[in-house]
Length: 406
Image (cartoon, rainbow, N blue to C red; front, top):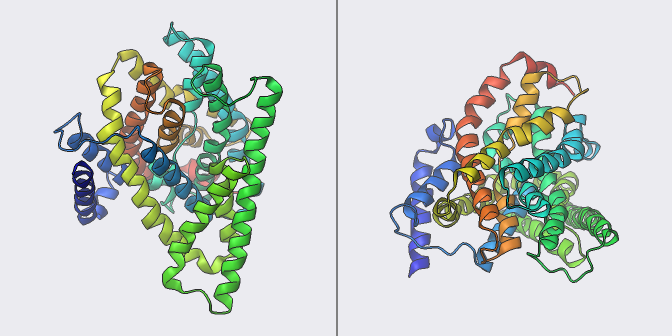
């Protein structure tokens, strides 16, 4: 019966928000924030009307699939050639900004958490390093924001999830939270990182290319029923994730690359992909944010300490913004753009997935779990409130017009 109450509550939230979605979506109450607040109000931290065990294996699988679907959908709306070539902003943010964020986050964690070892500090930092473009939909969907800036944000958030997996498992294994059946030598880890990335790219490229070519041919000769197209697109996203996992690659990198290649070879399905992102992808991600508010955020609040909140806020601000600013030195872009890209690094699905993958149903490290969930909670609130107004203000700035040229 409990699960029926949860589904009923989620259905009601979808209906109510849908009725007022136009005025709410353009204000400081975007959908992810509204769904998280609804879950928080109805869950154990609020009225206690619903009871969810979000640390279970089924929810982890649901969260992983959701992240893969969102990455696939976001990538499918992008230009393959320009993404693979990658503009200098995205390249610098991934190659320099991401490692610097992890390193800076580790140093700050060592200073704030005296009981942490270097490995535990690094684990917290790498879990919170990847960003989530789903929380910045007001930016990505705002066509007044220059395409170069939007593509930079989507590319960074699409790839940094997968690039963070190997460091997360490295420090989780060194801290004794996961067992990978190896001696932990640096040779192994170098190979593990390469395997995750290379095989993830390979798996996604093959799946996306084969399926994209097949869809294009089927549509050309009249075999493809448009009414079934969106369902099949979900299958492509899922297949890319599973195939990468089977060959030892990273499923999130694979899902992103699959979306790029699928859309490039199957332009006739672009409308289906867009609808997929807007409908199925959003349905899954909003469901995760609702469950996060109902079941995971209360865990953070129940174990609340001011030091956790301080690190969470620093993670959303200086720990990210300073490394991003350093990584963009020499690009010639103006400070408003640097600050804009630095601020819009919201935390969301990836952090939830990483915590559940590493800690499962246990509470082996309350500080890491509580701090991560607090950071995600604050990110949903702060980035949700600022996404639309900041996007509108930046779009009309001189910096946007100057730095938006590719």
